[in-house]
Image (cartoon, rainbow, N blue to C red):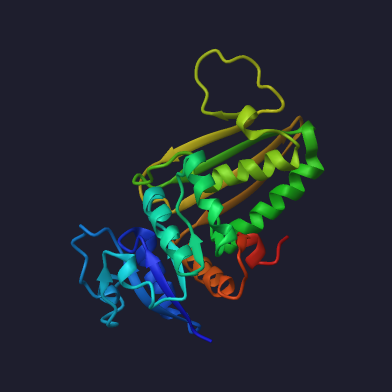
Length: 268
């Protein structure tokens, strides 16, 4: 069965990669590409925008105009746009894969409330490699325990608007859960000045922005005499878009509920 996919946030870097991944996957077809109503891309062929040649799918500025044409929505837009889109998906019983980051606590709570109405898949990162790292981090933290200092480093391109990255935050959540800590209480986002000795239960985050870095993440477990590092480096956004398309195919077969890439990959 072919999964008909719509892409929200199609004008962005990830949107362009998603168009390519969806078009090239033998189990999916690109049913719709959605951008802001004011975008100059409205009416443009999605394939030509994505560098694939003409595929006779016009970019639109209104999800309501195409809601009957797709099976699953993949949304990499903005928090406000995603919340508007998930409301429409819920009304029409359409599963949604969400890759949008930067939600406030209230916005995330609103998003998660739709899990009782439709299959909802939310992930900080759709790369198979990154999700394997999440699993490895959980194992490492439980094995190494409180005897190791833990730090999270991430680097992204100059255009990324949120900091730290959603992936880095998720890594912190995995670590805090494994170590039985409250991330909101122990997270440290940058250091400056005479800060004193490092508290053992701290989970530190360091952020770098510049150039065209797609995404680098490293978690360091440091103790006297040794250091363990778990690193993932992405060289193409296709690592994420291919995973999101894989998630959409999987999600179409699920009942209402909340899922993530750990479920898709069978890593629970």
